[in-house]
Image 1 (cartoon, helix red, strand yellow):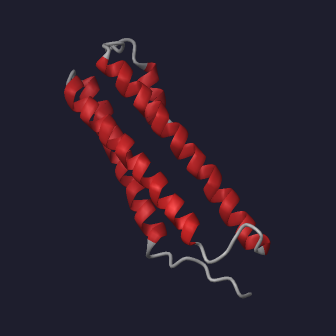
Image 2 (image 1 turned 45 degrees about the vertical axis):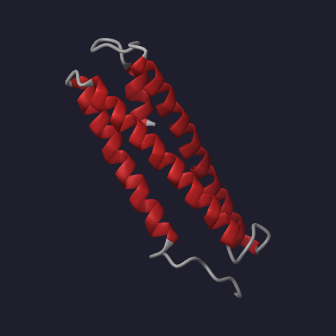
Length: 123
């Protein structure tokens, strides 16, 4: 009682759309790589990295504007721990994709040797 949750059609929906879009762009990057279109694959990876950064920024703003804190009983704890772990997952994934982009540009992937790129996409 007394805790005002976020409107699910505002920031949470925005971040959901960002995450869904990042799934599309990383899949596009992988398909372009498999077709030998390294430049297009790089574009897809960079776009996905930008979406990861945007998600992280929006989540940070959401935390700053939250009308409740982690000290607000179970709701605050569950919200910040759950979304915090997910935010860390996105940050690690963004870094993973950035490393994959660097390796792609350096020519370290081939049609037979590209597990790092696939693992980054899976993550």
